[in-house]
Image 1: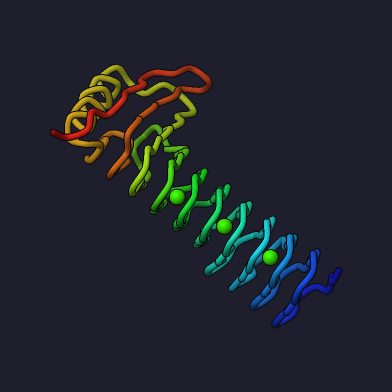
Image 2 (image 1 turned 60 degrees about the vertical axis):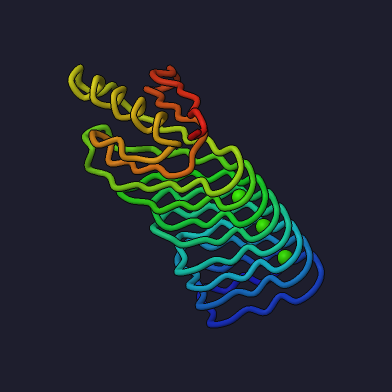
Length: 209
Ligand SMILES: [Ca+2]
Ligand SMILES: [Ca+2]
Ligand SMILES: [Ca+2]
């Protein structure tokens, strides 16, 4: 276990390591089931093989590598899950690539660009209900689900437009934009819109003939 305030570079090597820092330029966790906890920026993270758990303030790029990894960042970040069934939470928005495996990607903040890639992926998008966000999810291959979570109900007019846009996307192979929410989708198989815990719209996408 290492816990200074800021360090330039950590090479954890083999074995199951736990690294706790305030911030760092780069952390390479290496092989094994490792943990990284940082309150501020860790610019570059390499998870390596094993089931790694990474919690950071933010990151320029985290590569989680092989294994079923978990990642959480408060600020705008970029993460690549690599192989395995990865869980990634970008609370302040950012970019996430799921890689192979069934990945679960959550995004909040003002903007996000999510790629599920191979496997049956799920994206959860906390979209501002005033449409000020800019989010994109491309499910890639597999059966992918997008769940859009609204903190409050949209206006009656927006609700109609959301339903219309979702219906159009469903008829277009899971491709298109929900304009009132600023959400663009590609290659998704199921679309859900929640207001709080209540399902407002749930739509299976018909494959294009
Ligand atoms: Ca590792
Ligand atoms: Ca992984
Ligand atoms: Ca995937």
